[in-house]
Length: 232
Image 1 (tube, rainbow, N blue to C red):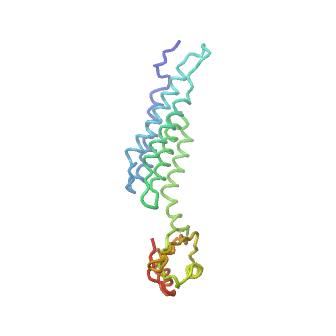
Image 2 (image 1 turned 30 degrees about the vertical axis):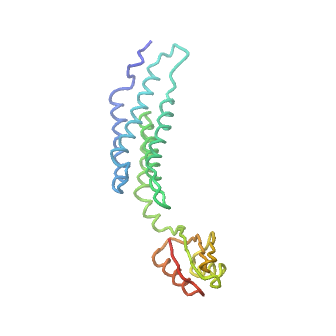
Image 3 (image 1 turned 135 degrees about the vertical axis):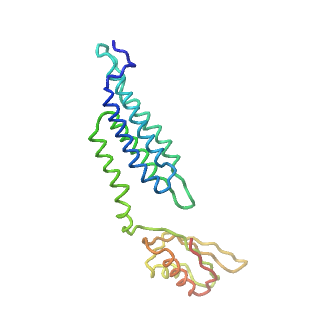
């Protein structure tokens, strides 16, 4: 029986696979580092190389086991464990700041470079290189395409009016004339102060946020009995 600690994979193959993992980690990590993300160049490279090394180890143990016995190590077990563990690392990169969530792309990048590392470590060089090309195109080219897409943005408009002032339907109508749609509305009544506060969750197409908010605020301020309008 061959010793399970031996390495049936040639040293030059190991160096090639690890070298490609280093390259993939550097290329992908550079983009994250340039955007000031927490999981930058070092984290991405170490993740990719570690995945490749683990896959080389797993493959070596599998190929080094004797074919004369009925049981052989499962070469995918380590890979499955790595993908489970990288989920925790990716979750740590996701941060919620107010109404926005940051780090989702970074978490996806960590997961992706792990897959690249596993591919290179298993000897699937072409698959790994194709994946690296896809990653480069996604991270370096797609942002310019995304910039031209007018996606939906959201905000909250809060209007304070007197009880006999502008009604809810009038608020919706005025907002709608500015290509901003109201998705949800609620209000609070203050009978002592004889006023009410109307809150509208609005949706609008990506554009100049300051210009859009100013137009909405100015239009609503013209309404009857309006005391205050805010956009957040």
